[in-house]
Amino acid sequence: MVATANSLVTAICTDLQLWTLLLLAAVTSLFLADFLKNRRPKNYPPGPWRLPFVGNLLQLDLDKSHLVMQQFVKKYGNIISMDIGNIHSVIITGLPLIKEVFTHMEQKFLKRPITPIRERVFNNNGLIMSNGQTWREQRRFALMTLRNFGLGKKSLEQCIREEAQHLVEAIAEEGGQPFDPQFNINSAVSNVICSLTFGERFAYEDEQFQELLRLLDEATCLEASMICQLYNVFPSIFKYLPGPHQRVFRNWGRLRLFVSHMMDSHRKDWNPIEPRDFIDAFLTEMTKYPDKTTSFNEENLICSTLDLFFAGTETTSHTLRWALLYMALYPEVQEKVQAEIDEVIGQKRQPSTDDRESMPYSNAVIHEVQRMGNIVPLNVPREVTTDITLAGFHLPKGTMILTNLTALHRDPKVWATPDTFNPKHFLENGQFKKRESFLPFSMGKRACLGEQLARSELFIFFTALMQQFTFKPPINEKLSTKFRMGLTLSPVSHRICAVPRQRCWRRNEKEEKEGHAL
Ligand code: HEM
Ligand SMILES: *[C@@H]1O[C@H](CO)[C@@H](O)[C@H](O)[C@H]1NC(C)=O
Image (cartoon, rainbow, N blue to C red; front, top):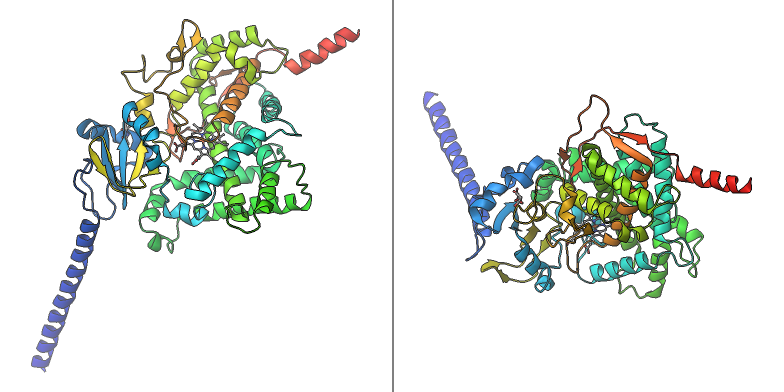
């Protein structure tokens, strides 16, 4: 009896040992496989020590990842390697190297790396995350449509000016009391894209419209979170786990559904001779290639529309919120902007982009807002398409490339007061001065497709608001320039007061006309 028990114990023990051994062997080989897979090629750029599987992911405190890295750059130089999960990435610092990458070497950097999240949502379609033929066709078409928009209908500029009027009215309704500007500004900016893509704008209170904006904001904010980074490293596991990352997919799903309904309703009253908007123009393009050898299909219609929505809403609206915040923090700058507006535009008409030339100060202020706001700190990632040598280092095909725009926009060798808001950075003898180290829209063939549109929006919205209001911190509340990390940096949620300056120009015009009539 005792003997049997004994041998049972021995058996279990040997069994356990066997299991332990097997487990150990399995784990070791996993680590070994990971190590071999992630072995640095010769002459690979230096970088901080990485953990198996997650790489440097945990070193990147995501809330302020772009600040934590400073010490690494000091230690390793202008081109450093990091593994974000299993993605091999290289971060490039400094104008000379960035220019090299985006000019004569750009052909090798035109690709976007695809994260598992993006792959599942967009399946390599659309504008921002597509590559190859799809990207070339979609980008050319979107640029052309943006340029031609206005044939037979309102121009984009007119759209922006009308929307600025709605925005001024909505903000006037706050009556100078503290309010969170996010709602109004986000709605106004998004409406410009809605006019372009859907041919209609929405009332700011429209529930469906607000739901759309909320879904977008939540999806992009969540996508920058740690759990989503982990999804990107272990998609096959996280796919089955509950958590906030599932909301990303749900939200994009609902956004897609909305665009697909829009597409269906456009089809019903579509007149190929008179395209009303981006969707109409896309439908026309689809009929041109019935053999389906191009990317002009429903899937790309939906994805490109969503990309315009996504890239065109958050970026510009965050920048405008930074602008108002800086004006409230720097009242003397705000006064100068208003003085310039009063002199060049006056109170009787609405600003237009033609005024920009004669308004160097306001133009400089908008540039300085973009420099300080720095909303895309590490640019949008690119990927190396063949093995190359950069600055003496070997970058294998497939390496992800990030360019440090923060370093450029805060370079103490270039900017007189790198960390302080100062419009003089863009002025010389009272004239507007372009700066090379200013690349908020990036550069090259894959640079921001909406730069012209964004610049028009920023100028018209900003000057229209400065013409009508003075922005101030609420009494007894302190405004800060703290930011929220999402796919783009935005000011943390805050309240501000918009104190009306003079009577609205539209009322003035009306009174003048009535005056003439009398
Ligand atoms: C202040 C506003 C904006 C900023 C700071 C900004 C910034 C950027 C940056 C840094 C990129 C990456 C470029 C690269 O990879 O080199 C980009 C790409 C892009 N932007 Fe913007 N953007 C803004 C507004 C807009 C607007 C209004 C639109 C809508 C029309 C837009 C559409 C796009 C698209 C479609 C891409 C992808 C281009 C491609 O991959 O070929 N952006 N943007
Ligand atoms: C980018 O540059 C800034 C400013 O020099 C620095 O603080 C930051 O750590 C850098 N980020 C990365 C990821 O290299």
